[in-house]
Length: 159
Image (cartoon, rainbow, N blue to C red; front, side, top):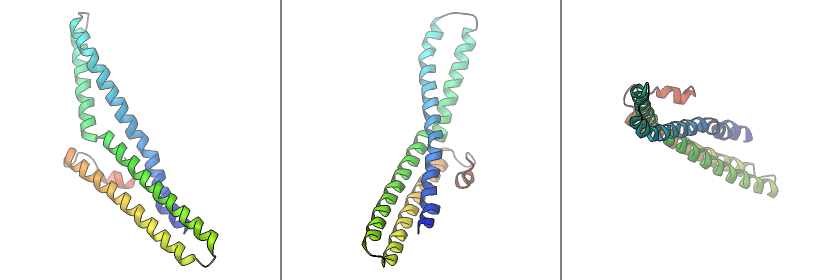
């Protein structure tokens, strides 16, 4: 039972934990860069200096690119989705561990009850992951359009 839980639940928790940080960082870095760059534009347009026109153009392009990337990839939504899924899996795992501990403390003949609890945990984990994957693909196809993102990379872990 423990091996099944390790393969199907704990590995999924680890997967979300390891990947959500990159989406959080992408969201925060791009959002901060857009805010700072946008705040600089009025100053740069008011002050004349050598290269001021090109500076304003470069910063304007930077703002447009970062805003577009954020809108296309929805880093904030992916980060949120991964965090929620990880939390739900951790809660289901904690409930399973408490129930298994109660069974272990009870009688040695509770193997069948242990398997039943494990089936419930695996079912809950599958629902969480399937729900998150479904939401991810709906977001990708709606926001990026056909061919915008290779959704197969999401499944294989290459993204």
